[in-house]
Image (cartoon, rainbow, N blue to C red; front, side):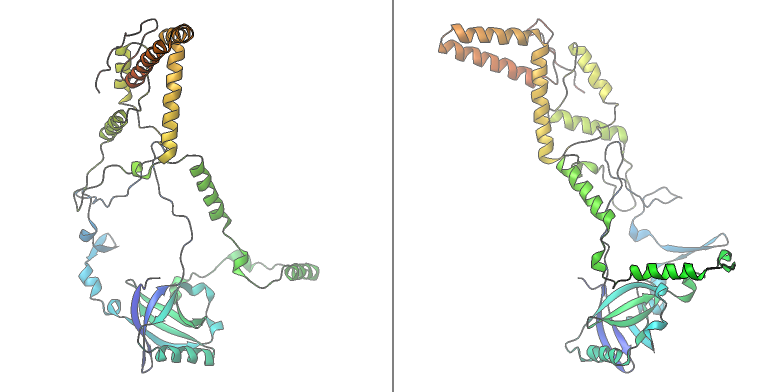
Length: 376
């Protein structure tokens, strides 16, 4: 754990230096927002409504609005408030623990001794144990003056911040003021039900079912290859400071198409070379594909797509059928040298078709009738 604050407990004339640690943490799976069309990250910008500039944190101040007027409070002015700069946890009362309203408890912190000798720390802990009391303290943390309760858990001092009295709402429900008659039999039955469910509380017996099922869903999608490359979910970075850059959608689409073409993963078109070029021009206006599989899954799918496309092209093209038949006959009638020559010729023809597949099209009945695709 990392200490979030350092201070000292003022216990009468005794000063107890301590380090403050957050005693709780959130176990929820962290999720972020993405665009459902292409999986791109959704960013929130700190944009000024007057000048429309994206503002850096260093140029942001806090303000208060009342009756149509806004008062701007600078960082220096806020830090000048005495309570904000105090690092003292002042003990003001010792009260019975049952007098604390559980609704007032806010957040818990562990306190660790921050001195070479923890004698003062142990002394305060023993005083709380011997008197069976809770220390009420006041302290300042994260730009707020707070009320707290100091108690013991497993030989460690625990500081629990409390809500101020005016922060707890009053329950005022007129429907509860109506006189309701409950029969003795109903009360007996409800008491019997309570007794049947009575047990000692053990938090280990309870689990957060939603988080468990959410984790199972995520792992299942990862195993099925239904995932995106995280780097591809980030678009153009915003500029530093107050000069933010607005992402140009068309420019982002063009870059995605250029990157895809550079990888040689295009899809074979149908028709003449001119039609293939026109089809590519039309594709520049289309949005980016919804899913891009990451890692090995992407490579596996890409290899499978290429081999499937090659088989489909060979099956549909008359030249592919003729080449296959002639190669088969030559294998039965010619010598080993002829076999080698025919195999090399077939391999070159197949490699040429596979390499030129994104940019050229072979018409049925012609072996060399290819035209280069127009550049984007």
